[in-house]
Length: 173
Image 1: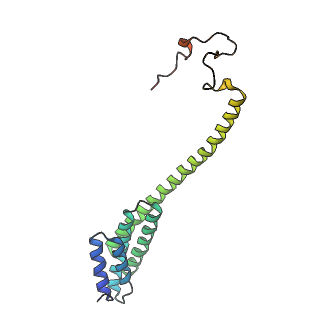
Image 2 (image 1 turned 90 degrees about the vertical axis):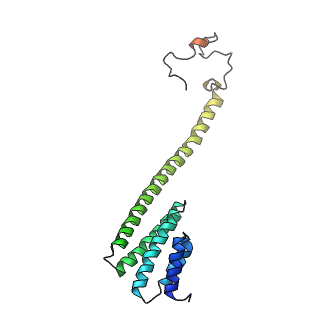
Image 3 (image 1 turned 30 degrees about the vertical axis):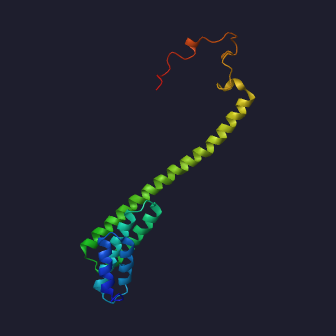
């Protein structure tokens, strides 16, 4: 019968085996209301594993983080019901480690984004200042210079093309 917690648990296990983690999660959650503490422990354990697996398949780091945090809560509940279970301890430690790695990765990406945003804010001001300088002194912008005009303002002769680059300039890619 669908209201039977054992039915819900078995349906969750079947959904998990077929990688339908959302359905598995629903069924395991429905099993948690059982008065049978051993079945409840198995449901918490499997729900924790299901939430972790569901999170692994998600690109959105915030959604993954939320699922993994929920996974830890379920595995913690399973640990409270059976504190000496080595499989639950192992999975709980594993999910915690992966969650910490994810948090570090998110921090690093946030820091990189802040640096990029800061640089992007700087660049328009530099461009604006450069444009103001260029409009005041067109000789400062090589694109605005007429190629027939001398590059050295004190020399009225056109520059020699062979001498236009320094001798020690790096090779061009």
